[in-house]
Image 1 (cartoon, one colour):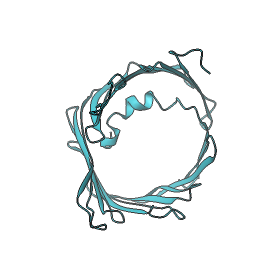
Image 2 (tube, rainbow, N blue to C red):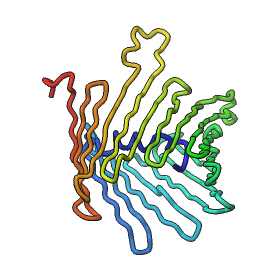
Image 3 (cartoon, rainbow, N blue to C red):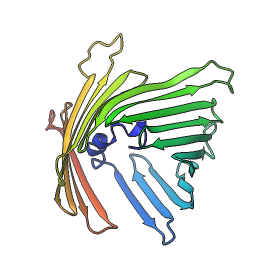
Image 4 (cartoon, one colour):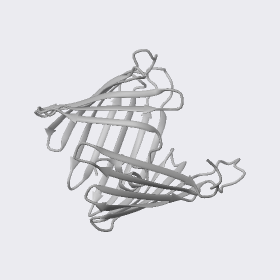
Length: 277
């Protein structure tokens, strides 16, 4: 686990990553000198979205997410690795080109220690400036972490604004992980459980709770529970299944033809309204 944002990643990925219902294609290739290229295209209801991305490294200098997309956004990230023991310096920039007020430039640092955990901080010097930070402490498998985002308001002359603050606790065992995190400034909470049962089977469950508004007429929809799993039929074939408390039942089938080509097919039905399309 590299940062606070990955707190519940194992469970969330298992219950969402292969269940895609849009028209999408991804192509990734790597050159002999280590440069990686990714092309991503998605056909939506009324338009096509696409992006081209590259990544490469030289000694301790790493360039990631060097990208341009059909929304006329260009950007990239640069990491200067191992400046000190466990410490990397980071820089990320993005410009909307034809979109006003969409540029950002973030300077930051990332620290990782096997006995402590991780700490990340960054400052967006164009907006705000906005300061973000997150930490994840790991002690004998017990996890405690949090994240904050502060808009200083110096550029606009406004007041300080804590636009984000959340915490999480959990436990990371040898073959399972359980945790709870907050979001939306304690306006919502997510609990998750993930277990690798054996070499072929994985299971996961999540529970999302949104704090009802003071004027809400009903809190019936404030909790959503999802349960699912994945099973490797063979070395190159995997099936996934998932259902949630809203009546959605999903399934997917992933076939790896070789190390370069993978096909995924997914479907979803509403068990509470089987007569619908």
